[in-house]
Length: 578
Image 1 (tube, helix red, strand yellow):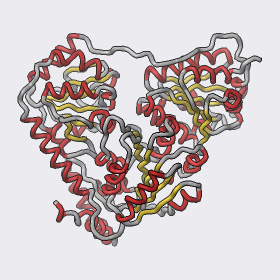
Image 2: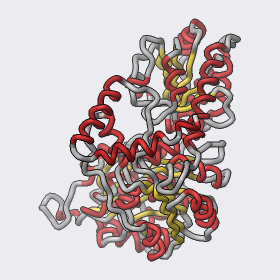
Image 3: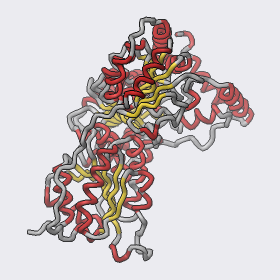
Image 4: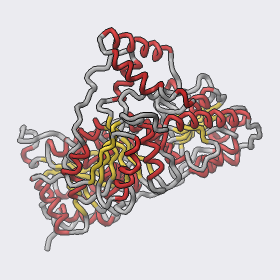
C-alpha cells in the first residue's frame, strides 16, 4: 500500500531516535496524527496548550541532548508554539517543530486561520522553510533535522495540511539523521597568544558556562594549572559546581558575593563556554580570553584580548600543554575562603525561622535539596524560584537543572518537567514553580494526569510576582499590580486527579514533601512562602541603595507602612543567628 508523506516522515523520525511528539491535534494536522496512530511507534504527548508542547520538547532535548519534536495545527495552533520555541532556540537545544498550514491554494488570500509561519518563526529558529509540494518534503525534512542537531537550535518545517495526506512517491526519504561530532579547536597561533596572556597574569579567574557540558575534568584541569577560582554562570552550575575544589559560586544578579569578588579581583579572565550577559559584573581593564564554539558570540559582553573558537573540551586539551603550572595560591585561597563564608551565610538563611506563618523560601529549597534523589532532574520557573535553585540545589554530575535561563520566560518549570519526565519516566523530576508561573499554564496539571507523568511540583506560593517586586524596590518604585489572588493549588491538584498537599508552617514541610516524592504519580505541594523575602545581589550599587530608600519612603507616604513592617520582620529576624 502506498505511503503518505506523513507516514514517510514518521519513518524518518523513528529512525533518527525520536520517540514522541508533543502537541494538540487539529484539522490541518490530521494527516500527521493519523500517521502516528497507524504506525504506533511514536507516542503522541497530548498537552493542553501548544506553548507547553514546545517547552516540553525543549525540556526533553535539554535532558537527552537528542532531537525532540513538537507540532501545531495551522494559524493559532502553531502560533502558540512560539514562546517555547524561542526558549529552546536560545537555550541551544535541538527541537523540530512541525507547523501545519492552510491549504496551499488558499495561501495569500486571507483564508480562515491564515498566518505566514515561515516568517513568524524565522527569528526563533536556525532553519525555517515552507514545503509547497510533496516532492520537497524529503529534502526539507532532512535539512531541518540536520540543522537542529548540528546547530543545536530549533528547526521549523511548515507543511500545508493536504501535503501530509499526499502520496510519498518513489523519492528517496532520509533514514537516520544524527549529529555528526567533530573536533573543533583554535589554531596554534591563537592558542599560543592565550597561553601568553595566562602566563603573565598572577590572579586568573575562570568564568564557566553551559559550554562546559561534558568537559568537567578539563575545567578542573586548567583551573588547577592556573590556581584559578572557578565562577559559574547559572547555566554552567550543573556542569562545573560538583567535585570542584576551585568553585567559588555563581556571579550575576542572583549570584554569590564570592563569585563577584573573584571576577572583581582578577588580573586576567578566562571565559569557558559562556555568553554571560550582565556586563556590570565583568572586571574592568583586564585581558580576557574567551572560548566559545560559536565564534560570533565572542566579545559580545566584554572586550576580548584573545578569541578562541572551539569547544571547551577540545580547546582546553590543546591549550593546557602550553601552560606552565602556577604555584602561587594566594588569589585562589582568598576567593575560596570568601566562598566558604558566603556559603555559610546562605545556609543560615535556610533555617526554618521562629514562629508560624509563611516559610522562608530558602528553607523550602534546602528541604527539596535534602530529600531529592541523587539523579533528580530539577526545573525552575523564572523569578524567585531560580534564585533558590541557584543557591540551594547542589549538583553532583548526575542531577540536572533545566530552566528558561536565557529567554527568561515565566511558566517554564512545569512543561520543561513534562518533557524531562516523558523522556525518562523512572527518574525523579521536580518542578520548582512560582505561583504566577504555574497559574499561566495551570491546565497542564491535566496533562500530567492524562499522560501519566509522575512529575512532582513544589509551588513557592508568595501570592505575588515577587521578583518583579524586587526589581521595583531596587528602582525606587512602590509595588503595584503584582499581587496575586491565588486559589488553593493543592485542592486544584486533587480535583485534577493528582496528589495535593498544602503547607502553611515549617513543621508541615518535610512530611508533605516526603509524601509527594514517594507518591506513584504526579504530585503537587503548595507551600506558603514569605512575600517580602529579599534576595540581595552580590554587588549593591549606589543607585540600588538609593532606589530602595525611595521605595521605602514612597511606600510609607502612600499609606502602605504595613508592607515595610512585614519586610523588616521577614528579613531581620535572622540577624541573631549571624
